[in-house]
Image (tube, rainbow, N blue to C red; front, side):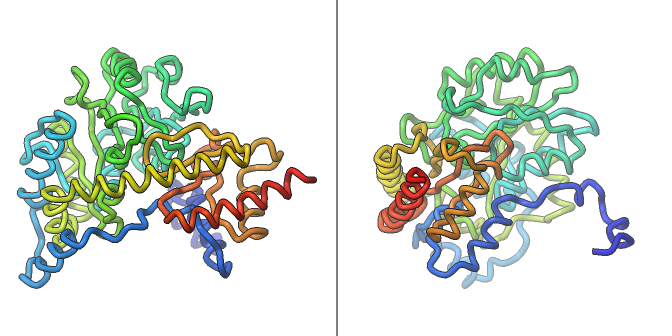
Length: 392
């Protein structure tokens, strides 16, 4: 790009680094016979009865705009689902809106809340879009690097140390991508006390809330005094294997939702109509599918942890999402160097931990959203690679 053209572009955007995941997998796609444990996407097809609902919407000509906030029927089903699963009560007409995936809801939430110079405290390692979204919304990102010895949970001491008079928002994401870490009720209660004391707003990304293996997910919004100051982000991609349908949602205080919907109205208009009809079916009748997929992921999770033990590769046990975050620091190379060599020498793709923040250095993200057969082949290649490194 010429200097003259670059001068015409937004400096805020041009100064952002591209996604470390995308950059890495553009290379991986060019390698024949590559086995990938990198993509954070369910390997299950969207359940047939959910697809049928989408097909029926197309057949019936239900392809027009919905209201900006989303179909009333879908908003009601989401509120009913959250009440049943987590004890959360929301007004479907005022306190929920349907977004184009959870990612749009995160972006819109930040833009609705932030004035230039407001600080957003967020935990790392984390999903790659958090920091760019904070910056593009005019906020100042303040990272809390989570620690393996704490099972990548946020501690009250870490949160207190990160706060300043300019802090407005705390962003948390549990179950976590990339670590698979969870926060249980007693963990969240301590965080909620600090949030209330400092009058903060919480953006809680709960896209993996249905995928927990130790205990049922607890939303920080369900704790006393927290619902009115929490924006819950969720969606259909992970739990219902609906990534390509691009559908998420946000739940929260009516005044905040009003401003979020305003941004959504001008930028998007409404989420895909056919996807919304399919999502109604998912909310009404999809729980058995979620249970089946969760049980399968748990089987794969246990297999992977057992293989890591056999390889003597340190990895704290993840109890959420479908990722493991093994520690590769013993090999004396960066996580990108490790992942690059593994890709070229054994044709096995994983994601460098550094793609998820500086504190991810020394780790790799391994997704187990793949069949046991694929995981077995991947672990064979991983074992061969590690053996070669240790023999030198």
